[in-house]
Structures are given as C-alpha cells and as structure tokens.
Image (cartoon, rainbow, N blue to C red; front, side, top):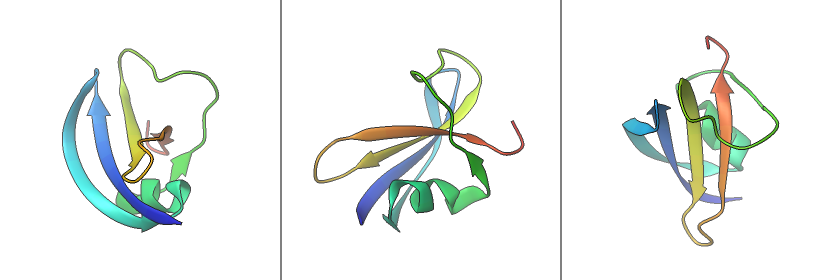
Length: 66
C-alpha cells in the first residue's frame, strides 16, 4: 500500500496524471479496468505508468480498451 503517481502514457509522453492510494494495481484502475502485461514498457501506443512515490518503483498496465 502507498501513494502512487498514475500517468496515462501515449507514445512515450504523459497526457494525463493524478495521484492514487492503495496497491499499484488499484492505482492503475483510477481511469478504468486494466490488464497486467509482461515485459518492458512499450515505446509506442497507450499504457498506464504507476510510480510509487516513496521508492520510485514503476509498474505499467494496459487499459482494457487498448
């Protein structure tokens, strides 16, 4: 549990940003359902980046609509 910065990314640039509390998966759901992908962040397309404010650890997720 913690506080996270949640960014909606499009082609490597943040187009929307907010903060959320909970787990990284709960934070990622701030704009709707997400899928948990495997591998590194994609260089293009749309995804959600979640950064834990205290540790700087990041996770990424795909919006269900993507």
